[in-house]
Image (cartoon, rainbow, N blue to C red; front, side, top):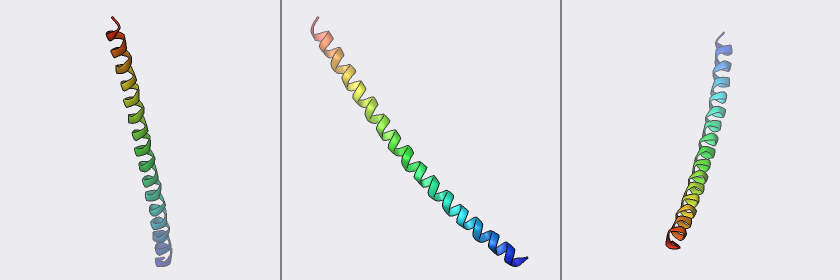
Length: 59
């Protein structure tokens, strides 16, 4: 019985290591997506401000 429990502990440790690696990968991907989204929003805001400035200056 002790051998089976030890084997199960090893399996659980391996599974935990795999899941923590997956969690790290997901966290990195989320960070990259967030940075990309912030860059797009910033660029769009800059374009909108430039267009409004041109429209206001022409009147």
